Amino acid sequence: MKSKKKVLLIARAVSEEARGKAGGFASRVQNSIGESVEIEHCEISELFFELSAYAINIYHSQKKFDLRDFDLVVIRHIGKMANEAQAIVQYCEYFGIRYTDEYLNRLMLDNKISTQFLLWFNGIKNWPHTFYGNIDEMIRRFPEFGGKAIMKDNEGSKGRSNFLVESVAEISDIQKQYPDKRFVLQEFIPNSGDLRVLVFNSKPVLVIERKGVDGSHLNNTSQGGVAQVVPIESVSPEVIDVCVKAASIARLQVAGVDVMFDSTNNKSYLLEVNNAPQVSSGAFQDEKVRKYSEMLLEMVGIDVG
Image 1: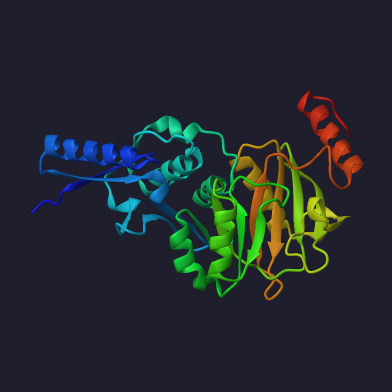
Image 2: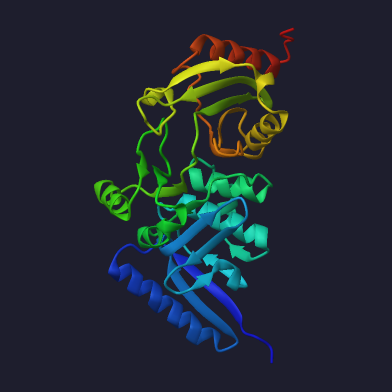
């Protein structure tokens, strides 16, 4: 017997009234389409996003389905959830799931989770284990991180709204304190600092080593971390190549790629790909401005020697 086709309708429905209308619409479509197709529906914020070096998933924790269970995913409207929609359509593209509307795959990436999804689907998979979405599901799965994780604003920068959490109570308290923010929960990588690799016009031009002070988990200089410029040659070519590839995939001519090394095994992880890497501010402004100026000269065809 031929199995039913399955269609998922995704909408942005914040209020109970809007959710009721979305459910009613799905029921009407089901009645109209008949029994040959099964119609499911959900609110876009109900979906949970997971990514690690080995796996990637978008699923509904209560209805117990993954987007891969469907033949067609229809994103009806997204409201302010463009980041989630971006990740969803990338997921559909990668796994060969038909979706609408295709314009959603042209949205500009300017957040952590959709950038991670884009790079993962293009072969850059060395990310810390990451959760994004429903806070209750984050809390349920927090023990997988061994009792310690990083909780940070999906659209944050410069180390702002970035917390080291060691209990589910802390996760809940932070979400209550910042109810309008959407947080990423990421495994904590033991480290002695990180690297900011500046990639200008597909070239690695500067590497800045950053270290937190006074026991802080934040290495950002904007959060009090200390920094020094290190020779590009001191960083493994494989790591530099990944940074250049990441900037290229994200279509960034000016990028700051953050890399961290696990102090227990020296394994490298990408943390973020920044499209505004503080060229005109922060530490080592003279060096950054010089490299930026050289990039501009090269882009207009002037040899910098």
